[in-house]
Image (cartoon, rainbow, N blue to C red; front, side):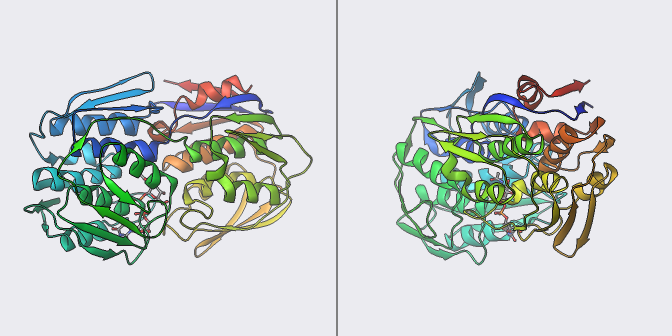
Length: 417
Ligand code: UD1
């Protein structure tokens, strides 16, 4: 199992290019199941989740699913086997995204339940309830979601809670349904608008993606297209935190500053000078970081996927920062590891109270999930001495060549095989 050795402290300097958004590519790959003809996605990050989704698609019968550089091609050959088995799904919860497309295209699907997840229970009841409203018969049998339908029927559905992949799953299913589907209380994440843009280019009729109400008029078929994936706002945010914690001077390139407003606002409150340009954000060094409170919420508020990385930063800020997690119930597993590096953090219910600035010292630490791993990398950059992060397969799920990118900015980071 690979580990990452980070030797700190360092000061990042230079320019870094952000990859395409993992959380946009995954639903777009699943959407290829809806499409007749070749699909080409550009700006695709070569991360493990993308490779896992490619395996799922190949298993389902898509031909020529191949990632060359940052271009992914997939071609429909008629879905032969609408079953996503446990072995593939257990490593990536987002595999559930094939449920809606399979039902809409094949009229049946058998998808393994994603199961427990380190950051909370993460049920899929909202996906299932919505697809049932569209006429699908769905049972849970032997750990699988077993679903069947004739042609799905358009329906009016209000999500009782905002769900990102739930919104995506149902929006995709509705593209080939009979009649109009109106989805209310949808997630507003930019990845949903990007998925809709891709589907519209394939011939789907979707309005309102990126707003709380999405209206989809079903069509009988979708055709292949070429689509360029939006930049990964979570990767960009992670590099912003990394630059800020090291007092570095870094230009984050090929990102979308408009998708990072809440993150930029928080960093400014912490006293980090940032300048947003067209497709870039510049972070300049400036004195002591200041503590600031933050609460995670669905987009456009501060993302849960940057909570852990911000906590690393808060350990080095002057004063007390209260970080409240409202999206997932168990997303503080990095706290124990940060404490081993010298951080002063107590958890009270949904809030972590961080007293800074704490001098961080390198230590052997364990990554518990994708974003927690990124938090330990950020902390390691500011810590005195060696931080060796175990279980970085979590990091590889969502960050493309992170050690190469950090190395190019002057960090001492190496992968230990
Ligand atoms: C997506 C992102 C993930 C991010 C999360 C929140 C992808 C591939 N993943 O995950 O990186 O952290 O959004 O921004 O895009 N819930 C239910 N029932 C459901 C579905 C969700 O109760 O059927 C709950 C979840 O447990 C959680 C909340 O709703 O508490 C939000 O989850 P959701 O938006 O669905 O997260 P994901 O789509 O899994």
